[in-house]
Length: 345
Image (cartoon, rainbow, N blue to C red; front, side):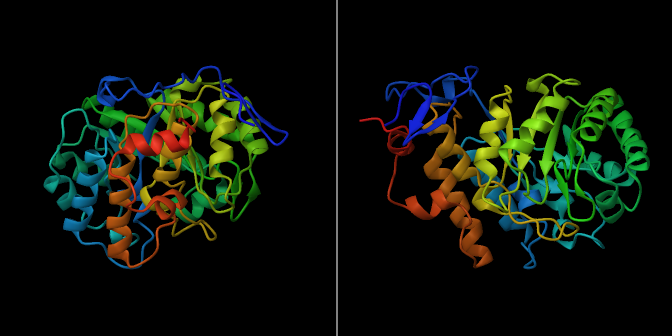
Protein backbone atom coordinates (compact mmCIF):
# COMPACT_ATOMS: atom_id res chain seq x y z
CA UNK A 1 0.00 0.00 0.00
CA UNK A 2 1.30 3.47 -0.87
CA UNK A 3 -0.10 6.44 1.00
CA UNK A 4 0.20 9.93 -0.51
CA UNK A 5 2.50 12.19 1.48
CA UNK A 6 4.30 9.48 3.43
CA UNK A 7 4.99 5.99 2.20
CA UNK A 8 3.90 2.76 3.87
CA UNK A 9 5.18 -0.26 1.98
CA UNK A 10 4.50 -3.62 3.63
CA UNK A 11 5.03 -2.17 7.08
CA UNK A 12 7.98 0.05 6.13
CA UNK A 13 7.26 3.67 6.96
CA UNK A 14 9.16 6.36 5.07
CA UNK A 15 8.67 10.02 5.91
CA UNK A 16 8.66 12.34 2.90
CA UNK A 17 10.01 15.66 4.17
CA UNK A 18 7.41 18.39 4.50
CA UNK A 19 9.73 20.94 2.90
CA UNK A 20 9.55 19.11 -0.44
CA UNK A 21 6.59 20.15 -2.52
CA UNK A 22 4.66 17.62 -4.59
CA UNK A 23 5.13 18.33 -8.27
CA UNK A 24 1.91 18.12 -10.25
CA UNK A 25 2.16 16.43 -13.63
CA UNK A 26 0.39 18.62 -16.15
CA UNK A 27 0.88 17.92 -19.85
CA UNK A 28 -0.14 21.49 -20.57
CA UNK A 29 2.57 22.99 -18.37
CA UNK A 30 6.15 23.35 -19.53
CA UNK A 31 8.54 22.03 -16.93
CA UNK A 32 11.01 24.81 -17.72
CA UNK A 33 8.60 27.33 -16.23
CA UNK A 34 8.60 25.67 -12.83
CA UNK A 35 11.19 26.30 -10.15
CA UNK A 36 12.91 23.01 -9.23
CA UNK A 37 12.39 21.79 -5.66
CA UNK A 38 15.76 20.05 -5.71
CA UNK A 39 18.84 21.37 -7.52
CA UNK A 40 20.97 18.67 -9.13
CA UNK A 41 24.67 19.43 -9.43
CA UNK A 42 26.11 17.16 -12.12
CA UNK A 43 29.71 16.03 -11.57
CA UNK A 44 29.99 13.38 -14.30
CA UNK A 45 32.32 15.19 -16.73
CA UNK A 46 34.79 15.81 -13.90
CA UNK A 47 34.39 13.51 -10.90
CA UNK A 48 32.77 10.84 -13.05
CA UNK A 49 35.58 10.62 -15.60
CA UNK A 50 38.67 11.41 -13.52
CA UNK A 51 39.27 7.81 -12.50
CA UNK A 52 38.64 6.21 -15.91
CA UNK A 53 41.71 4.41 -17.27
CA UNK A 54 40.62 4.96 -20.87
CA UNK A 55 41.38 8.53 -21.85
CA UNK A 56 38.28 10.41 -22.96
CA UNK A 57 39.09 12.83 -25.81
CA UNK A 58 38.10 16.46 -25.53
CA UNK A 59 35.35 16.21 -28.16
CA UNK A 60 33.66 13.36 -26.29
CA UNK A 61 33.76 15.29 -23.01
CA UNK A 62 32.35 18.38 -24.71
CA UNK A 63 29.54 16.42 -26.35
CA UNK A 64 28.67 14.82 -23.00
CA UNK A 65 28.43 18.29 -21.43
CA UNK A 66 26.18 19.44 -24.27
CA UNK A 67 23.89 16.42 -23.86
CA UNK A 68 23.61 17.06 -20.12
CA UNK A 69 22.62 20.69 -20.66
CA UNK A 70 20.09 19.60 -23.30
CA UNK A 71 18.56 17.31 -20.68
CA UNK A 72 17.91 20.36 -18.51
CA UNK A 73 20.76 20.18 -16.01
CA UNK A 74 21.76 23.69 -14.92
CA UNK A 75 24.95 22.94 -12.97
CA UNK A 76 27.61 20.86 -14.74
CA UNK A 77 31.09 20.54 -13.27
CA UNK A 78 33.19 20.30 -16.42
CA UNK A 79 36.88 20.07 -15.62
CA UNK A 80 39.65 20.02 -13.06
CA UNK A 81 42.77 22.16 -13.22
CA UNK A 82 44.96 19.76 -11.29
CA UNK A 83 48.41 18.70 -12.46
CA UNK A 84 48.25 16.33 -15.50
CA UNK A 85 51.02 14.40 -13.78
CA UNK A 86 48.54 13.24 -11.13
CA UNK A 87 45.24 13.10 -13.05
CA UNK A 88 45.92 12.65 -16.76
CA UNK A 89 42.21 12.35 -17.55
CA UNK A 90 41.76 16.02 -16.65
CA UNK A 91 44.77 17.28 -18.63
CA UNK A 92 42.57 18.90 -21.31
CA UNK A 93 40.59 21.13 -18.96
CA UNK A 94 41.54 24.30 -20.83
CA UNK A 95 40.46 22.83 -24.18
CA UNK A 96 37.17 21.59 -22.74
CA UNK A 97 36.27 24.94 -21.22
CA UNK A 98 37.20 26.85 -24.38
CA UNK A 99 35.25 24.47 -26.65
CA UNK A 100 31.91 23.99 -24.91
CA UNK A 101 28.94 25.95 -26.25
CA UNK A 102 27.61 27.70 -23.20
CA UNK A 103 23.87 27.79 -22.70
CA UNK A 104 22.40 30.84 -20.92
CA UNK A 105 21.34 29.90 -17.41
CA UNK A 106 23.70 26.92 -17.18
CA UNK A 107 26.57 26.99 -14.70
CA UNK A 108 29.91 25.42 -15.72
CA UNK A 109 32.13 25.23 -12.58
CA UNK A 110 35.63 23.75 -12.42
CA UNK A 111 37.71 22.17 -9.66
CA UNK A 112 40.76 24.13 -8.49
CA UNK A 113 43.61 22.71 -6.32
CA UNK A 114 45.80 25.80 -5.90
CA UNK A 115 46.60 29.28 -7.19
CA UNK A 116 48.50 27.91 -10.19
CA UNK A 117 45.43 25.95 -11.26
CA UNK A 118 43.25 28.98 -10.63
CA UNK A 119 45.36 31.21 -12.86
CA UNK A 120 45.08 28.65 -15.68
CA UNK A 121 41.33 28.31 -15.23
CA UNK A 122 40.82 32.07 -15.14
CA UNK A 123 41.84 32.24 -18.80
CA UNK A 124 38.82 30.10 -19.73
CA UNK A 125 35.96 32.49 -18.96
CA UNK A 126 34.91 30.67 -15.79
CA UNK A 127 32.36 32.03 -13.32
CA UNK A 128 32.54 29.45 -10.53
CA UNK A 129 35.27 27.33 -8.96
CA UNK A 130 35.26 24.54 -6.40
CA UNK A 131 37.86 23.93 -3.70
CA UNK A 132 38.19 20.60 -1.91
CA UNK A 133 39.75 20.14 1.55
CA UNK A 134 39.63 16.67 3.05
CA UNK A 135 37.65 15.61 6.09
CA UNK A 136 40.37 13.29 7.38
CA UNK A 137 44.09 13.64 7.92
CA UNK A 138 44.89 10.42 6.10
CA UNK A 139 43.01 11.39 2.95
CA UNK A 140 44.36 14.93 3.08
CA UNK A 141 47.92 13.57 3.00
CA UNK A 142 47.14 11.19 0.12
CA UNK A 143 45.04 13.59 -1.97
CA UNK A 144 46.67 16.96 -1.19
CA UNK A 145 50.02 15.95 0.31
CA UNK A 146 49.43 18.11 3.37
CA UNK A 147 47.47 18.26 6.64
CA UNK A 148 43.86 19.42 6.84
CA UNK A 149 45.01 22.70 8.38
CA UNK A 150 47.57 23.36 5.67
CA UNK A 151 45.06 22.43 2.99
CA UNK A 152 42.57 24.96 4.32
CA UNK A 153 45.25 27.64 4.27
CA UNK A 154 46.06 26.88 0.63
CA UNK A 155 42.43 26.93 -0.38
CA UNK A 156 41.84 30.21 1.42
CA UNK A 157 44.41 31.82 -0.88
CA UNK A 158 42.48 30.50 -3.87
CA UNK A 159 39.10 31.55 -2.48
CA UNK A 160 40.34 35.04 -1.60
CA UNK A 161 41.61 35.61 -5.14
CA UNK A 162 38.52 34.14 -6.81
CA UNK A 163 36.15 36.26 -4.74
CA UNK A 164 38.28 39.32 -5.45
CA UNK A 165 37.87 38.51 -9.15
CA UNK A 166 34.10 38.31 -8.76
CA UNK A 167 33.72 34.55 -8.96
CA UNK A 168 31.54 32.19 -6.97
CA UNK A 169 33.32 29.65 -4.79
CA UNK A 170 31.90 26.28 -3.81
CA UNK A 171 33.49 24.07 -1.18
CA UNK A 172 33.77 20.30 -1.03
CA UNK A 173 34.63 18.25 2.03
CA UNK A 174 35.66 14.68 1.24
CA UNK A 175 35.45 11.55 3.41
CA UNK A 176 32.78 13.06 5.65
CA UNK A 177 31.68 9.80 7.29
CA UNK A 178 34.50 7.38 6.57
CA UNK A 179 38.09 7.37 5.30
CA UNK A 180 40.04 4.51 3.65
CA UNK A 181 43.03 5.42 5.84
CA UNK A 182 41.58 6.74 9.10
CA UNK A 183 38.30 4.82 9.38
CA UNK A 184 35.12 6.46 10.81
CA UNK A 185 35.13 10.26 10.93
CA UNK A 186 33.90 12.45 13.80
CA UNK A 187 31.01 14.63 12.53
CA UNK A 188 32.15 17.50 14.76
CA UNK A 189 35.36 17.75 12.75
CA UNK A 190 33.42 17.92 9.48
CA UNK A 191 31.22 20.67 10.90
CA UNK A 192 34.34 22.66 11.83
CA UNK A 193 35.79 22.37 8.33
CA UNK A 194 32.42 23.31 6.84
CA UNK A 195 32.28 26.40 9.00
CA UNK A 196 35.78 27.42 7.89
CA UNK A 197 34.79 27.09 4.22
CA UNK A 198 31.85 29.43 4.76
CA UNK A 199 34.16 31.84 6.55
CA UNK A 200 36.33 31.83 3.41
CA UNK A 201 33.32 32.96 1.39
CA UNK A 202 31.97 29.73 -0.10
CA UNK A 203 28.33 30.13 -1.11
CA UNK A 204 27.72 26.39 -0.63
CA UNK A 205 29.52 23.38 0.83
CA UNK A 206 29.10 19.87 -0.53
CA UNK A 207 29.60 17.00 1.92
CA UNK A 208 31.08 13.97 0.18
CA UNK A 209 30.93 10.35 1.27
CA UNK A 210 33.94 9.61 -0.91
CA UNK A 211 34.11 5.85 -0.36
CA UNK A 212 30.37 5.30 0.00
CA UNK A 213 30.36 3.75 3.46
CA UNK A 214 27.67 6.04 4.84
CA UNK A 215 24.23 4.92 5.98
CA UNK A 216 21.08 6.87 6.77
CA UNK A 217 22.10 6.73 10.43
CA UNK A 218 25.59 8.15 9.91
CA UNK A 219 24.23 10.82 7.58
CA UNK A 220 21.77 11.96 10.25
CA UNK A 221 24.55 12.15 12.83
CA UNK A 222 26.60 14.21 10.39
CA UNK A 223 23.75 16.56 9.55
CA UNK A 224 22.89 17.10 13.21
CA UNK A 225 26.36 18.60 13.67
CA UNK A 226 26.62 20.48 10.36
CA UNK A 227 23.31 22.33 10.75
CA UNK A 228 24.76 23.90 13.90
CA UNK A 229 27.11 25.92 11.66
CA UNK A 230 25.10 26.30 8.43
CA UNK A 231 21.52 26.37 7.21
CA UNK A 232 20.42 23.38 5.07
CA UNK A 233 19.97 25.52 1.95
CA UNK A 234 23.74 26.18 1.99
CA UNK A 235 24.64 22.47 2.16
CA UNK A 236 24.81 19.94 -0.68
CA UNK A 237 25.17 16.18 -0.38
CA UNK A 238 27.52 14.07 -2.50
CA UNK A 239 27.17 10.30 -2.19
CA UNK A 240 29.12 7.47 -3.75
CA UNK A 241 27.03 4.34 -4.10
CA UNK A 242 29.63 1.72 -3.16
CA UNK A 243 27.33 -0.09 -0.73
CA UNK A 244 24.09 0.77 -2.53
CA UNK A 245 23.14 3.31 0.15
CA UNK A 246 23.14 6.47 -1.96
CA UNK A 247 19.39 7.02 -2.26
CA UNK A 248 18.58 6.07 1.34
CA UNK A 249 21.35 8.42 2.49
CA UNK A 250 19.85 11.14 0.34
CA UNK A 251 16.40 10.65 1.86
CA UNK A 252 17.95 11.04 5.30
CA UNK A 253 19.50 14.32 4.18
CA UNK A 254 16.29 15.60 2.62
CA UNK A 255 14.61 15.33 6.01
CA UNK A 256 16.92 18.14 7.15
CA UNK A 257 15.84 20.40 4.29
CA UNK A 258 18.72 19.83 1.88
CA UNK A 259 18.01 21.39 -1.53
CA UNK A 260 21.11 20.46 -3.58
CA UNK A 261 22.39 17.01 -4.48
CA UNK A 262 25.53 16.06 -6.42
CA UNK A 263 25.34 13.12 -8.82
CA UNK A 264 27.05 11.66 -11.86
CA UNK A 265 25.46 10.55 -15.11
CA UNK A 266 25.54 6.78 -15.58
CA UNK A 267 26.89 6.40 -12.04
CA UNK A 268 30.43 7.19 -13.19
CA UNK A 269 33.09 8.02 -10.65
CA UNK A 270 35.72 6.98 -8.22
CA UNK A 271 38.82 8.53 -6.73
CA UNK A 272 42.45 7.63 -7.51
CA UNK A 273 43.39 8.33 -3.86
CA UNK A 274 40.52 6.49 -2.16
CA UNK A 275 40.75 2.75 -2.58
CA UNK A 276 37.35 1.13 -2.59
CA UNK A 277 35.55 4.22 -3.90
CA UNK A 278 33.10 3.25 -6.62
CA UNK A 279 30.90 5.45 -8.75
CA UNK A 280 28.75 8.34 -7.65
CA UNK A 281 25.03 8.21 -7.15
CA UNK A 282 23.71 7.95 -10.73
CA UNK A 283 21.89 11.07 -11.92
CA UNK A 284 19.29 8.96 -13.76
CA UNK A 285 18.48 7.04 -10.57
CA UNK A 286 18.33 10.29 -8.59
CA UNK A 287 15.93 11.97 -11.02
CA UNK A 288 13.63 8.92 -11.13
CA UNK A 289 13.69 8.71 -7.33
CA UNK A 290 12.80 12.39 -6.94
CA UNK A 291 10.01 12.24 -9.50
CA UNK A 292 8.65 9.28 -7.57
CA UNK A 293 8.46 11.51 -4.49
CA UNK A 294 6.65 14.16 -6.53
CA UNK A 295 9.71 16.40 -6.54
CA UNK A 296 10.27 18.67 -9.51
CA UNK A 297 13.74 18.66 -11.08
CA UNK A 298 13.10 20.21 -14.52
CA UNK A 299 15.20 17.42 -16.05
CA UNK A 300 14.16 15.39 -19.10
CA UNK A 301 14.93 11.83 -18.05
CA UNK A 302 14.78 10.50 -21.62
CA UNK A 303 17.53 12.88 -22.73
CA UNK A 304 19.49 12.20 -19.54
CA UNK A 305 19.39 8.47 -20.24
CA UNK A 306 20.66 9.17 -23.75
CA UNK A 307 23.59 11.11 -22.26
CA UNK A 308 24.38 8.21 -19.93
CA UNK A 309 24.30 5.69 -22.76
CA UNK A 310 26.48 7.96 -24.90
CA UNK A 311 29.37 8.06 -22.43
CA UNK A 312 28.97 4.41 -21.38
CA UNK A 313 29.12 3.30 -25.01
CA UNK A 314 32.32 5.27 -25.53
CA UNK A 315 33.88 3.73 -22.42
CA UNK A 316 32.70 0.29 -23.60
CA UNK A 317 31.27 -0.50 -20.19
CA UNK A 318 27.72 -1.01 -18.93
CA UNK A 319 26.02 1.88 -17.23
CA UNK A 320 25.95 1.80 -13.44
CA UNK A 321 22.52 3.43 -13.44
CA UNK A 322 19.81 0.89 -12.69
CA UNK A 323 17.17 3.23 -14.13
CA UNK A 324 19.14 3.58 -17.35
CA UNK A 325 19.41 -0.21 -17.63
CA UNK A 326 15.71 -0.77 -16.91
CA UNK A 327 14.28 1.96 -19.14
CA UNK A 328 16.73 1.94 -22.04
CA UNK A 329 15.07 3.49 -25.10
CA UNK A 330 11.51 2.38 -24.35
CA UNK A 331 10.18 5.92 -23.86
CA UNK A 332 10.21 9.04 -26.02
CA UNK A 333 8.51 11.41 -23.55
CA UNK A 334 9.95 11.82 -20.07
CA UNK A 335 6.49 12.55 -18.62
CA UNK A 336 5.58 8.93 -19.29
CA UNK A 337 8.49 7.91 -17.07
CA UNK A 338 7.34 10.36 -14.38
CA UNK A 339 3.92 8.69 -14.36
CA UNK A 340 5.54 5.31 -13.77
CA UNK A 341 7.81 6.66 -11.03
CA UNK A 342 4.91 8.33 -9.22
CA UNK A 343 2.38 5.52 -9.84
CA UNK A 344 0.11 7.97 -11.67
CA UNK A 345 -2.71 6.37 -13.66
